[in-house]
Length: 88
Image (tube, rainbow, N blue to C red; front, side):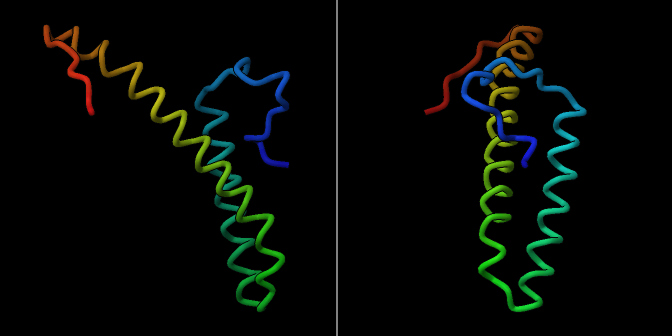
């Protein structure tokens, strides 16, 4: 099961740290290798479940990156005496 899968009752309570992110990146590497191997063997249907997990992991990592950018940007701007400008 993917590291990114968290039951609904535990969502929002996980500690995001470098170790968790590295585990996800390592898992993604393994998933890509599995997908590549199955594709080379002509077994595309077996790839679907791995592709879904890979997609979920990538979206999760993207969400973490977006959240950390949002959190860091105003703090960094204030340190330099700048105002945060909303994008949009």
